[in-house]
Image: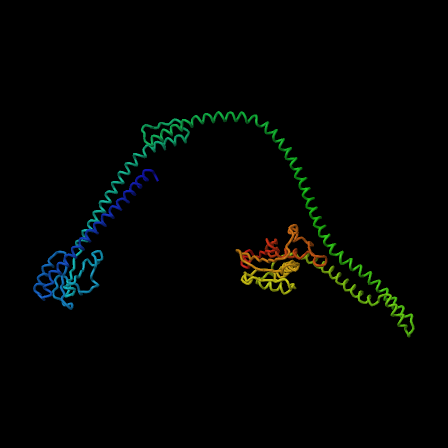
Amino acid sequence: MSLRLKTIIGVALIEAISLAILVSLTLNYLKTTNYDGLNQRVISTTRLLEYTVKNAVLSYDLATIESLTQELVTESDIVYVAVFGEGGQLLSEQGQTPSGYSVRILEESSKQVKDGIFDVKQDIREAGITFGSVWLGFDMTKLNSQIKEAQKWTAIIVLGEMSLVALFSYILGAYLTKRLTQLRDAADQIANGHREVDLNIAGKDEVSTVSQAFVNMVERLAISEKKTVQYQQQLEQANESLESKVAQRTQALLESNRKLTKLNQELKSTQEKLVESEKMASIGTMAAGFSHEINNPIGVVNSNLQVSLEYLSVYQNWIALLKEQDKMVDLEVLKQWEKNHHVQYLHQDFKECLLETKQCVDRVKGLVDALQKYSANSHEGSTDFQPIELFELVHQALSNIQVAKNVEINIHSSVTKAPLVLGSNSELVKLFIELIKNAVNSCSCLKDRNGHIQIKAKQIGNFCLVDIEDNGVGIKREWLKRLFDPFFTTAEVGHGMGLGLTYCYDIIKHHEGEIEIKNREEHGAVVTLTLPCVAATKISQ
């Protein structure tokens, strides 16, 4: 869109808006004044007629009433006149009367008239008593035609003025854009490589200022081009000497690259050694824990077996002694021998040794089974996952835990309102068994107060957060980083293998969740589990 067209459109819009406001106000004023004048005339005419015919109506002077109505209907803008007496009796009517006299044909103002006749009514009153009424119909055709004629001439004037505005805008735009066209042609010459342009810069207006700035720009451009040529020549000279410097720098870069490659290989080798060292350290930690757990029951088994062998030797000697005696056994000798060799004690201790040996063997078997289960449990896939109620999981876990008398477990109402979680029922029940059992053990160590465990839950976004809080003895700070390590335990020998929280960590990761253990500000610890809700898990799948 050219500047000339923009000027024409801009001036035309300003003029159109101004004229629209002016015409709207003028026509509105014209209608208002004419309608208000008509309303005043109608009011005064009806009141005058009511005053004039009042005595005639009261005296039932029909001749006077008829004369007054005939004289009034001769007015050009009065369509009809009607006079009613007491009880709605029609006393006189003149002109083009309506088909029926009803309050529905009456208008309160001339602006409400739609049929071209302004129907009004005035009651005839005397001493507060209504004796009749007068009806008049005023013709608004002439007034409406005058208003339409004014609107037509207003539209003609507006169109004429808009045409004149467009013409003068075109002339003004042509005058303003003439010198701008010269500037455009000069810019095209500069773009084509010509630096000598003839541009009129006379005058003090804005266009002259722009023209002067354009001429100054052309002069500076010519100077800049000369300097550019000089710089280019200097660059060509510098380029010739740069090739030898580049060759020298390239050799240095190649040498640096060779050193970096060698250093990178050394770093990789060192990294591999560090990884191997970490693996060996992990294996050593596992072997130490494993050997500790195995050696204790094996030592007990070895000791009990030696004692059992000695007991067995005593029993064998006793049986041999019995065989040497005749059928008439000397009971006193046997009783003395039994007393000297503590046979009664051997009966009880032999059985206890065998039972303890069996328990130790069961411990070793349980440890081996746990290791096999831990190493074989890869948690691949989740085909057995199903929606599970959180309260049902907690209930199943509590039914498999023995709680001490001084420990109270409280399940918050939020657990029953928690959303369904998607997972393996057996794994999640084992998860809650291990965590609640740890909390119970921590609270069982309290001597100065009763233990209290609270389980609560809440939903945050697409996840369900479960908190297991206790007021037990808490966890040492240096132990917090090792809680999930295999075979790490703070329990006494024979009371735990250190794999419970390791199982918990594997289970929670299998369910794409999170587990966090930290101490409370007062007493005890809190375990926070983050499990995906059913809807969120289905979307991810």
